Length: 224
Image 1 (cartoon, rainbow, N blue to C red):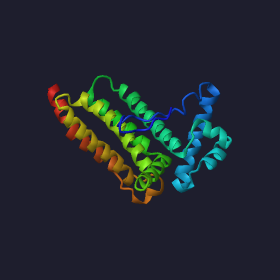
Image 2: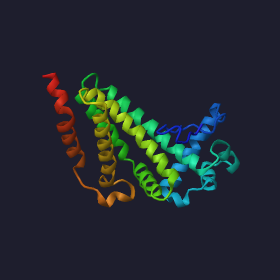
Image 3: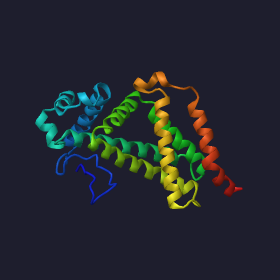
Image 4: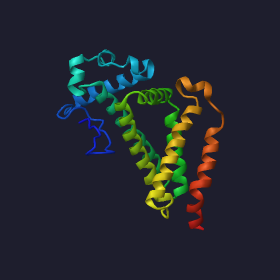
């Protein structure tokens, strides 16, 4: 079920699942994935102005009524897109980190690799460029992005808890917020999608140097 944030339920991650009671079989699940893939293509290619349920249905080769059976509104589609992206991105980071064994420094390096690889997708960069623009004028998108970044930040807090266990919870939250801002801002200068003209060579190396100086110094000192 696509969940909405509310005053009673602040900061709850939206679900990538469609309306409750739908997509309970493999065929329905496959159709939902096709709908979300089509929505991502439309949003990245044509922008939010070109995103309509009718256009998405045509791109996904389903009827409009069939699409609305799973996602009644365009807002539901956008929420599900964000949630799916977050779930997949966090899973990729966790899987990559698992290859680093128990050494925090190596796990951090692998996590950064996964994040940077995610930004290599022009479609993903264009997708978020559209969402940031939409959030300035659409309260629903702003709310969904806020929840998305809360989940992203929670994943970074989890990593910091391992790397810097001596930090207070409040300190970890602040540092995680700064790191998320750094990662997201980095996408503007790595040249994905229509932002390619703003690319600055060598940013990946600078990022790794900075993170190792800031995040690993305390962790590695404790190991000495």
